Length: 366
Image 1 (cartoon, rainbow, N blue to C red):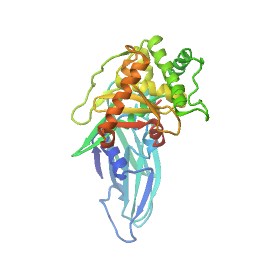
Image 2: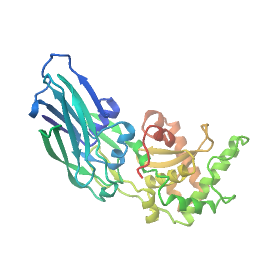
Image 3: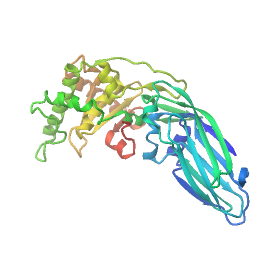
Image 4: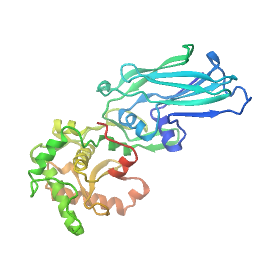
């Protein structure tokens, strides 16, 4: 038996970047008569476990969508008979128990991946220390291996922007899309308020029509976003705040990012919170927002016409202090500067169309 507890998210990153992680259950039978490939454990079964040492809800909740597992068991059978094995894992108090019953072929091995279901109500408000418990046994109850190891469970609103694994650095900024929650309870009332500021008293998304020119599409889409801007400014009193990084060190850069409901409740948002809030509102009416992530700033853009490259950008931090037109001018200027300096092309800054991130499996966390 061998245990490998990875650094925060490094096992997850290895799966995504190197495609070397486990997805579900895979079988790798050894050639007949090859004998033992790893050390045999109790009951003649070898067990090798690789697990992450933290649960970060913003990414953990995406694992199933992206074919990633939280911990992997490699089971090796050095005997001449197939063995039926039961694998169990959980983080008591935070997840349900995951259970798999598998047959390990004679002289072969199987990799079993598990991601115990995270209970939404158990996600803490602050970082908590918990225990990962796993158990491997034969179908008749004979114990092969049972262990408990400490893990950390982070709050739902914890965002990790970058992870370092040795000399490698991995950009995690695309997971901001998990905070874009168009079905959150606060979004529908916001859109009803926004409709009151629209000339047609309605918010309909991309409905300009096939006969509309590109400029007419831009005017139509901008009028809807202006209505959202006006509601957030006048009815919700959203003001800009500069929230500091909450905790973390080195390359793991965690930050608390407010979900839309939290920004609405606080009547305030920093640049990241505001980007998430506007993107949630726009996605709720079928528009395609873009998450623009710079090294020290974020703002939102949106397609003004479906199926085209036409885009308008908005500096969300100006919601409480400027007109819509001024906020658009500031957003457009920043976007064009990033384009002209090649920062998007080089990866210094990121332009994430939300529709692309949804297609890649990053879904709303609530």
